[in-house]
Amino acid sequence: APGSVLGYVEPGAMVNGLDVGAWLVAQQEGWEELSGGQRERLVQLGVRPPEKKSAVAAKARPRAGGARAGAFERGVAALAQYAEREGTVVVPRSWSEELPDGTSVRLGVWLSNTRSRRATLTGEQLERLAGLGLEWAVAA
Image 1 (cartoon, rainbow, N blue to C red):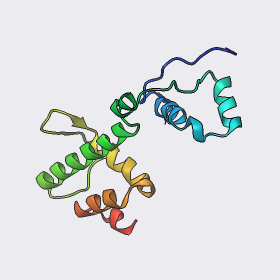
Image 2 (image 1 turned 45 degrees about the horizontal axis):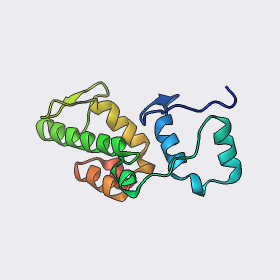
Image 3 (image 1 turned 60 degrees about the vertical axis):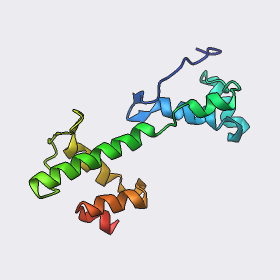
Image 4 (image 1 turned 90 degrees about the horizontal axis):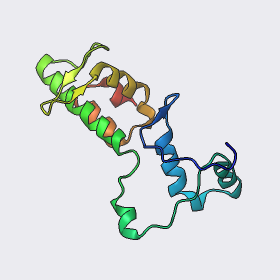
């Protein structure tokens, strides 16, 4: 409603495939860099500028994207485990791999998504995937 304030939205809250929580965190963290028009539109949506926090509190907060980086690490670990056991990196899309810590990784889906998003991967990430035998990571 007009004039209302948006409540806290946890990073990882997905709406139509977008992480709205992480987006809101990024907007608030970069509030000073936003143009006046961007700030005005956010205020109209109920987003308020961040309150001033101490330097200690700001450093203690986890960074946005941490979950995504963790997902990449879990996917690489699952792929390495699968490749060592099966001798191939060709994974059925429906395959789930259980890591030693009990975490289940939907490896086939992760691999498909990672390949389709390879343009956004860092050089280091592509090197790690190429090192496991993924040809598309070498050509990217």
